Amino acid sequence: MKNNLKLGVIGIDHGHIFDMLDEMLKEGCTCDYFWTEGNPLTLNEFKKKYPNIKRKENKEEILNDPSIDMILISSIPKNRADNSIQALKAGKDVMVDKPGCTTLDQLNQIKQTVKETGKIWSVNFSERFHVAAVAKAEELVNEGKVGGVKQTIGTGPHRQGNYERPDWFYNRQSYGGIITDIGSHQIHQFLVFTNSNQAKINHALVENTTKKDMPGFQDFGEVNLTGNGGHGYIRLDWFTPDALPTWGDGRLLILGDKGFIEIRKYTDLAKSEKGNHLFLANNDEVKHIDCSNVKLPYFSNLITDVLNRTETACPQEITYLSMELAIKAQEQAEKK
Image (cartoon, rainbow, N blue to C red; front, side, top):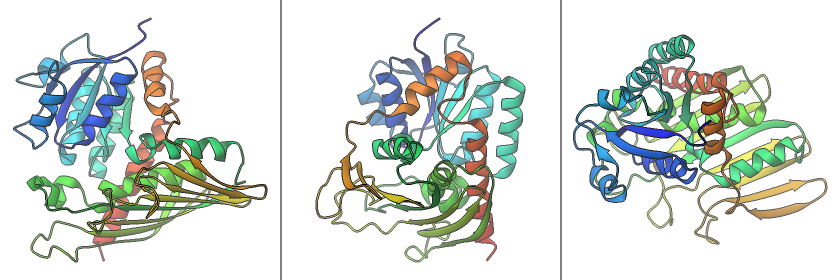
């Protein structure tokens, strides 16, 4: 049995493709080809960073290559479902940047295609899978360090910045809305840490207060959920101030009945410009854990899943539910 995978890349419109590809290459995978539509802002950086990955004229050349095992997708969000379905039907497993889709109809088509093909559709929720402190928190929760989890509070702040953005970034139909796009991260973590496989949306809200000339943009959102394992509150925004040394002070608070965990994902405000800080308080101890060297298990687990047809990286149903709740919350917020 082969011990690594050959990858193909379809769509590099979002910069998340760099971390997705880098982590898989670290695990021993290889990649020879990419395809993307047009000339996205990421193109020059991609070509400079990966000079040996050659651009194909059309994506069918990649999809029809029998040597390729998995497709990585980071196209414009509205196109990710179609790209995923094409890859699945071509017999490829898929890792797609979040949001993996932007409508419930797209999600239902993906579910049907996965059922028909038996292939894996994995959404790369990077605020879980790329954050070592979150991996450490999963370990501690599974060890019972905070008892039973009752609630998660997840924040997803981002910086608008003065740098160039693609047109699709401000188009609601293209990026899916702030809850679908960013909130899918926090909804996924809520399901994982509360061990919920069902949930209802109690409240959802979106606003645009800073760019009235761009009605498709949303700079604030919040969601409150109740799952069959616990509760969740989510706050999203594009208000990160310029002085902060990173794009957002993303945090996750995990409340248990015997303690709690706070994760400062990307910075420790006014103390450290590096991320992956975890704070644990329970009946036995209070401590800070630097998680910088904690291994990210998602990528090696996903490779194992592709090779062995298992579900160790993330259960397929939880991936579906994460996107379903995000899209439904987005729709509910926009009805107000």
